[in-house]
Length: 281
Image (cartoon, rainbow, N blue to C red):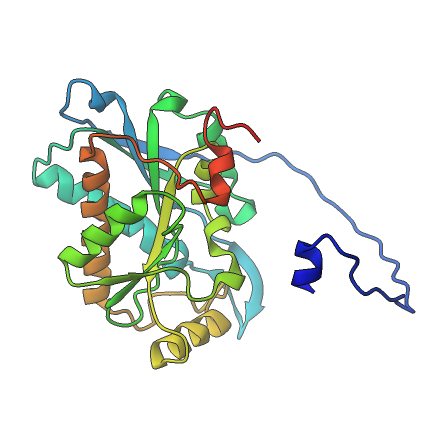
């Protein structure tokens, strides 16, 4: 089928002997929810006016349908873990008196569960000049469920940020992998995609695993039982060592990008290069 499509040839078709009629009700209302941003100022006289954006979303589902009598959807992994990670990165850099060349812009965005609304707004109306944002490193539900030996990097081969994350992970004894389940389209399903769509090279990272391993089974079980469910709470097993190593990697890659002489750029073969500023389609 794919070969036919790629060759611009007709594909087999058949009639569906069924009809479906539905009535949908839509309720609209206006609400207000805030993004939260903070800056660690860069030290280089020129590059301090450029920004590496480190992001995570601060919303979850709130109150929903009861599961085993529980209606509170806590969102511990999705995405309190991501918010905790970027707060820890910010605190670590502040306490160590870090002096990256570029500034690092920490953004906790709202409305991800409603369609990445907070990051879409921030990417379109940033608190800094739009062209000054050079890269985005996003954390969403990074799932420290088992030891961090592999780092799953969404967008690994789309831009030269792949070189930065490979070097950063190698320094702490961690190997990197592209998404082992590309059919899930994870690179375009969280806040990094809002930055991608305005031309900013981006990465998103999770604790990785190989297919058909106990770690893959653990991740699948978590998705089946806890994803967008009340059981995504503090009463679940967490590998704190993996979480700590993950935070270290996020911190170090953000600083590495901030210290680059050149600005990150999309790889020539990347589909997403079409979004780059000044690109022709």
